[in-house]
Amino acid sequence: MADKYTPAAIEEKWQQVWAEQGLDKTDEDPSKPKFYALSMFPYPSGNLHMGHVRNYTITDVIARVRRMQGYRVLHPMGWDAFGLPAENAAIDRGVHPAKWTYQNIDQMREQLRQLGLSYDWDREVATCSPDYYKWTQWSFIQFLKAGLAYQKEAAVNWDPIDQTVLANEQVDSEGRSWRSGAKVERKLLKQWFLKITEYADELLQDLDKLPGWPERVRLMQENWIGKSTGAKVTFKTEQGDDLEVFTTRPDTLWGATFMVLSPEHPLVEKLTTAEQKAAIAAYQAAAAAKSDIDRTDEGKEKTGVWTGSYAINPVNGEQIPIWIADYVLMGYGTGAIMAVPAHDGRDFAFARKFGLDVKVVVQPEGETLDGATMAEAWPGEGVMVHSGPLDGLPAGKGEGQSVEKAIAWLEKEGKGEGQDNFRLRDWLISRQRYWGVPIPVIHCPSCGIVPVPDEQLPVELPQDVEFSGRGASPLSPVG
Ligand code: ANZ
Image (spheres, rainbow, N blue to C red):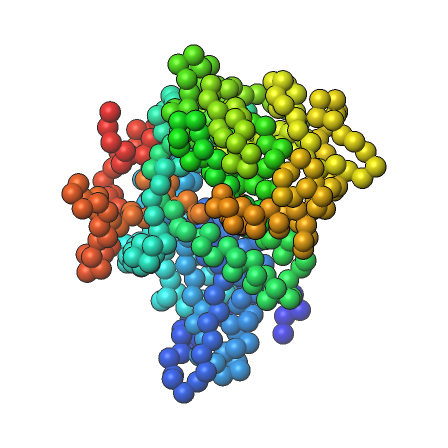
């Protein structure tokens, strides 16, 4: 026996023998127990890296052990082959994304073979091939029929020079487009979503069923789902519209001294008086140019504009001014808040900057806060004051405390109701790019969105397209 391991001499020879014996083929003998060894499909970037090697070795070891234990093992490989890099390569190098993708697949398949991994290559799939994405489309239609796929307007990154939507990865840290260098804007476009929020509670509860998982990972999941408990409260605008807010502190309603709408809120136009029109429009344009991270940066100076209108506080009939400000995001809660400057830091900074009232409704023990002179908000514990039915209660979320009582009172009075809110957003699946699965629906002018019948799937992606090199999808309408 040779005392040196020479991969070139040994591996190729034995891989050949395994191939001839069909060692990796899926055994279909129904008398044996089945085992499915599936690892995550790689993106066909062109070359394997050590992360792939580690990952795929683990699954390969499992598959081999199971075969030896007498299982009939299905151990396939596939390619997560749609996505933006293929399109970028097409633009940069003038090759069609399909050609670039299949070349990369060939190369990486060869590298996986050299590693001697025991895949059944007869079962290979590529997500960009019509016989595969037929099933992606079929699944989408099941979601659509179940009411779990839907379209709505959502903010996207818009490059005003290239006139195209950009992925987050194409926007640099200064908010500029990777290609044109233009300052990226936020623009509302109709998008497809999957309603993952329908499962938010279930996802949260079932984290308990993962006892083997690191606490750190479970906590990350929990924060990502981000459950907040509170209430939805309905204010009336002076124009007579309902203005709903989500609040985690419904007990502080008597201390609400103004309201703040996100600049994108649908009621802004109606609320804006003639005198305030120009200032509001300018502020909306400035907010559209900012990222959510910029907008919610706690440290930054608060900005905003009064709409010129008032709302009526449902608990005491007081008229309070309605402002717009970028620290309120359209994508969270209802996109509108009641501002309680005495007990919320952001609202406090805003009120001081614009000279708005500050009304204390929670008095901390041993102190007497005065709205006119206090130096910062008091978000902590205390006793409820100036709050009608809540007066004298301990402020807090526990049993018998102010929040619980406030919700019961709102529900009894028909002014609001308890509500949970989640940070988790529905999953935006449309991309406005070319190299992806066509959404299998017909936009019928008279009957709306109609799913393509199963027997007509797949709806194939046109192959014969030109890349303008300007970043726009070759399928976007000309003009
Ligand atoms: C009044 C209030 C008084 C609030 C108070 C807090 C303290 P979390 O915990 O993150 O769910 N809010 C609601 N929607 C918002 C939006 N779209 N953009 C920015 N802020 C929003 O926070 C919920 C609280 O954040 C809500 O409760 C609301 O302010 C604000 F002493 O309402 B609160």
